[in-house]
Image (cartoon, rainbow, N blue to C red; front, side):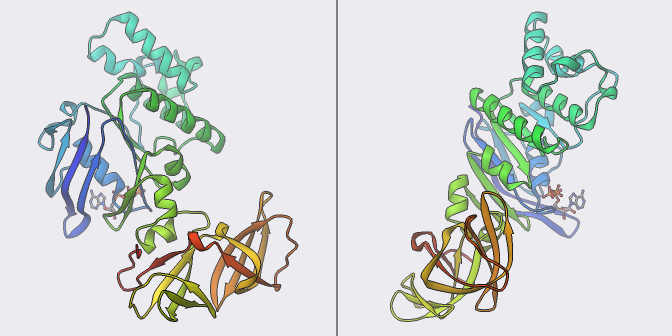
Length: 347
Ligand code: ATP
């Protein structure tokens, strides 16, 4: 059992509040991704869990044991960090087997694990090379293999695929997902790449300004963003927003159209809809196309609706040019509403 609990953690660097109000439980064997823009506090949180940084307040528990006063080596975790410290004086094989030799595992078992993880990371042909003779991407894979070889209860990874080219990154992502799904490991994975987050995670914690804004399954974060920040961050392109004013009970006026919406007494709301949840129709939001980008599978149309920038992902067979007028109907069940005061979603 390696459930991880982060209880009320905050971190200050001098007067700078890097993390606040972090309460998060990661279930045994769960794959949790910390996702957010640069500087939002992902690495700091991971380093606090690892013991490389201490929290200003709060507690960290792993497997029912409070660990925030323990040294990193006593926390039962394996780590892969951005700067992947592989030992230059050891071969790839020596690096991957390093922790296993420290644990005094039998030689045959070490060889088995080194070969297996090297194969998974596609570095089996490099086993005899010194790691000083490797590219950055190869070194990064050695670091991942070394952590996996430990078969740890908990693995912490900070952008472990960042130095790989796009194709290899895609391949490694699938490999990593497969390996961890087959293991009993609880994983926390830091990335600012939302596609990586969506593809790997059981749950994603979306971070912003040192806080966790939403922790939910990838599809939930995508379909039911808890706050405007999440709606505007997740998805490429992200959700469109339009201002809404009341037009009778449960009715809202949006860019001249009346739409069904929440029954609240609010004076204003904000409507959000994903670009792919719009389609050309007889009735709907009046738009003027500004830029039309054929992307093969789809047509990405940047337009204006009621003066606001608005994007639609449409059928690539549609013939459309900049300057054309079009009417876009949102899929009503996919529309989301936010309170502009709190920026939170209306249930
Ligand atoms: P990135 O994706 O760029 O790595 P991140 O979300 O991981 O970003 P952190 O590295 O956790 O962000 O940093 C969070 C904030 O805390 C940043 O504003 C950073 O400048 C600040 N910070 C991090 N470490 C220190 C430090 N040792 N001293 C002072 N400020 C720090």
